[in-house]
Amino acid sequence: MKIRSTAVTITAVCAAALVLTGCTAGGDGGDDAEGITFWLQEDLPDRVAATEDIVAAFEDESGVDVEVVSVAEDQFAQLITSAAAAGDLPDVIGGISLPQVRTLSANELVDTDAVGAVVDALDASTFSERALELTADGDAQLAVPSESWLQMLFYRTDLFEAAGLDAPDSYDKILEAAQALNSPELAGFVGATAPGDAFTEQTFEQVALGNGCELVNEDGEIELDSAPCVEAFGFYGDLTSNYSVPGAQDVDTTRATYFAGDAAMFIWSSFVLDEMAGLREDAKPNCPECAADPAFLAANTGVVTSISGPDGDSPAQFGEITSWTITDGANVEDSQAFIEFMMGDGYEDWIAIAPEGKVPVRFGTADEPTVFSDAWATLPAGVDTKAPLSDFYSAEVLEAVAAGPEDIARWAIPQGQGDLLGALQGEQPVATAVSEVSQGADAEQAAAAAAEAARSVQESIQ
Image (cartoon, rainbow, N blue to C red; front, side, top):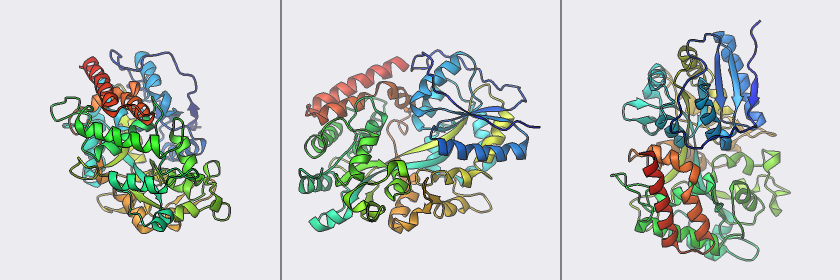
């Protein structure tokens, strides 16, 4: 009798350096025909359980045993370091971000030939071209892009309409709205400001990209102290120090403030869409109007996917591509079969786990080019209550979310400096600078400090 996969949640973090330099690879699979180990970068119990069900279907079909290991995002760097040093890497890793892909690649922990063969088997033409670009290094495919989530500026359409304000899609319009709507009872805007927090960096990156602020230029030189970046730091500092709520803000507090009806605008990912519709009990809107109508905020919220600044050539859309990869030394054949299943027969069930944050970047198959993207639009979202997002949001909002993967912009990767983006995740100099300007620090000085710290990290990985 074949043993079913068992999810193991890693809770203890081994003492290890955050930077992987010097680690040697050594997957636990190799020529082992006993099965594979799959690290899932997800620790929400409902999502882990849903993943186990899909894995069980693969086991039944293939006869391959899969050990599912649930890894919290904030523990991933340390755990992969320990595993690499011990020669005990998992065979497959799923749910990894673009910076994590680059960190794994920089430390030669990826079997790029095996990964590339999976993309070929699935047919590269069935994927988002942009997603493949962001997960490749030249001709080497570092990961198999799976889905995306978008970062957006959410705003109260009822309050904007009452005040005669335009949609906040530019620095000027955002600042105008924040000034007009800010009061002792309502923050004009709330955004991440916590130091050392990846969410703070992500939030600022979208704001910065829209103003033409890049982490590096085409020559690979750090640009965080450039005029467009100083302008971006100054703008965000003005917003968060003068028109927001007091204290350091993070992924939980920004959502809580907007859900309480205490902010007119906030920046968050598309993962908030089901929660804003009242479909998740542990993260439910509690605004005054929400008692009678849990979906009040969903009905009265608009989204801006791309923000433009005065120095930018065009608006920019920030988002994340999450991917699968095969480690160096893995049980290649079974790992490839597993990913092909998860991106094929199991793909619809996989994106159905959280469709609000799993926008497919494989749109369909060669025979049915849009089968996955068409299915995504109808999938029920939520946890405690399930319902299609179309029950709560306009077609315009959902179309903006679905189209996002093709327009995603990111720092460093287009300039061939993706390794730097991954290396900066430990120190988070941008988040530190954002925290400082949110407390009134000079934008030029904060930008200079961030740039200097980034240069130091860049030198350390060269």
